[in-house]
Amino acid sequence: MTSLTLVRRIAARPSIVFEALTTPEGIACWWGPDDGPVLLAETDVRLGGRFRVRFRMLDGSEHESTGEYIEVAKPTRLVMSWRWTHGGEPAEAGEESRVEIDLRPIDTGTELTFTHSRLQTDASRDSHEQGWTGAFDKLERHFAK
Image (cartoon, rainbow, N blue to C red):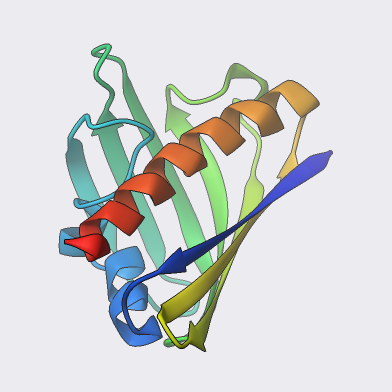
């Protein structure tokens, strides 16, 4: 198993970034690796609550992930399980991984540290890194407006 960690600086307070990470309206602004739309975003942000997000990429492919919130410490930390239910990286089919997001206030807004662990292969890690990089690029652009 393998993992990836990304660190980004977002031009918004941690509480605002946390909302973008956890509300259907916020998720619709940034989820997915390219400018394709979010088709469905459902969240129940509490310990044991679940999320489900479906998006379409510009190539027309659709992908859906779901998971359970394992830790919710608003507005500084979010931990959830991750499973592809449609599309996604083939090496992860039927597998569950883990996403951890830490938000720290900085002078310019928020430092976001994102870790996706328990990925099955190096190729899957690289694919997820590209996907999350595209998504966080959109999140940065959303708050730079």
